[in-house]
Image 1 (cartoon, rainbow, N blue to C red):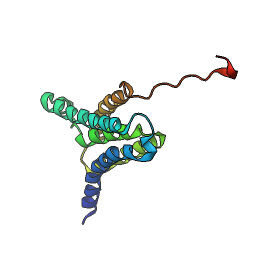
Image 2 (cartoon, one colour):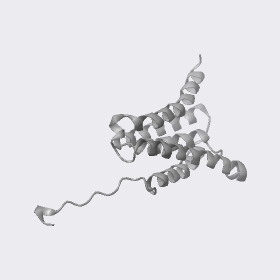
Image 3 (cartoon, helix red, strand yellow):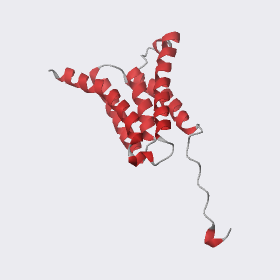
Image 4 (cartoon, one colour):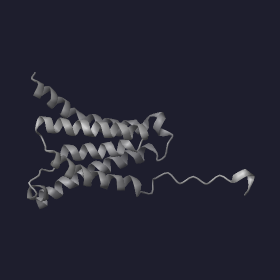
Length: 153
């Protein structure tokens, strides 16, 4: 197996691995006790992946990326959708998501799949749309009530 083939295998494994994590981690006791409930986290991840594919469909209809001399990166879109969803599990996942996203982008560029412009112009709108899903939904945890100071009510 050549280096290219090995790296291709790794690249092809990233999104399925992230998908398994996004669908399974919310059910673990560590995350299950947090709000929103696991099924909502899974639904949010699925919705974010749907946004990634909707972007691809929009590009196919409008040829927006080719008109700019670019290529819509479906791999980047799905990766970002899953990483945004995983990032909402906790701060550690935010850091891991950034590292994984940068490493995956570097791998795709090294392999010649996409340019940095392809990746950025795909990742930014998909990432923002997915962040809106998580920030503007009724399933967000309610704000905590402020504590009364020194027994004053």
